Image 1 (spheres, rainbow, N blue to C red):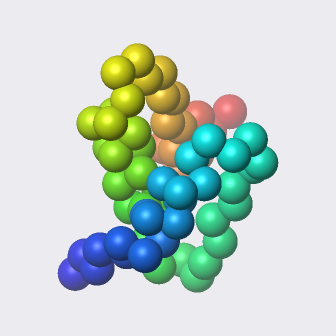
Image 2 (image 1 turned 135 degrees about the vertical axis):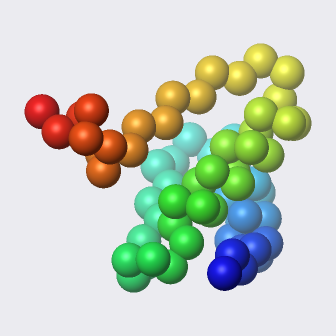
Image 3 (image 1 turned 45 degrees about the vertical axis):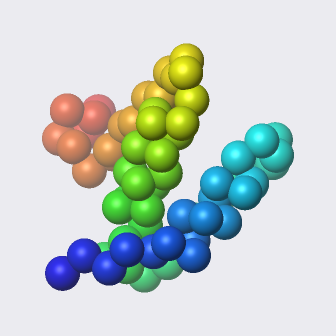
Length: 64
């Protein structure tokens, strides 16, 4: 079941242009990856020129 985390997404959006590093923490399976994907989709739909790289270190291609 997917629970939309609008409060957290809105907070990331408000902090968009602040140069500090944002760290998202939480329990395994709590929706951190989905939150980041929602944030990337928001950026892609609201910014004209976007260059985003997403790497999942759980992907076997990045094992080495």
